[in-house]
Structure formats: structure tokens, C-alpha cells
Length: 114
Image (cartoon, rainbow, N blue to C red; front, side):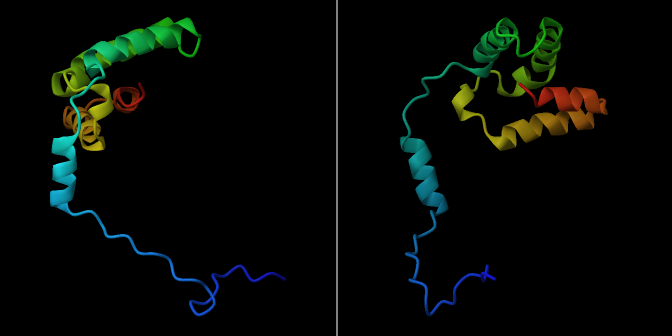
């Protein structure tokens, strides 16, 4: 029977250690990143939803429901953010806003799908 455990440190070659990025390094990297070239969420998602309907991935009624929920919940917070710059924290803020409004799980689940 094969031994599935990791070999002992004496027989394995040591892995090179990479320094962890610091907050200042991350801030410098973000500040030096090029200007956004992607359209904002408000412009990108309607075209994406239309394409999904066109290829048969979702129904027209589903796309309509998504557009409504995006207009009510997402666009006020992140509508002007380029789609490639949206963060998990921003999505989380939208979901928390929906929960705080005591909306149903259907609204909550559908808001995170597109």
C-alpha cells in the first residue's frame, strides 16, 4: 500500500519562499495600474444578458428579472465601476443591502447570478 502522506522534510527538497506582498506594495501596484479599458457594469451587463438570451442560455423573462434587480440593487452602488474592477467586497455590499431590506431569498440569489 502506497504511503499518501507528505514525505518528511529531510527527504524533500525545500520549497523556495516568496515574500508576501505588503499593503504598500499592493497600493502602489493598484495606483500604477493602467486606466480601465472595460465598460462600466451599467453598460456591459445589458449586452451580456442579451447575448445569453440569444444563445439560449437564459430565457427572456429571466433576463428581464435580472435587469430589474440590477437596476434596483447593483447599479446604484457599482453601476459606474468598470466590470473588470468589481471586487468581492462590492458584491458583498450589494448582498448585505438586500438582506438589510429584508428581501426574499429569491431576490438575494438572483442578484448575484449575472
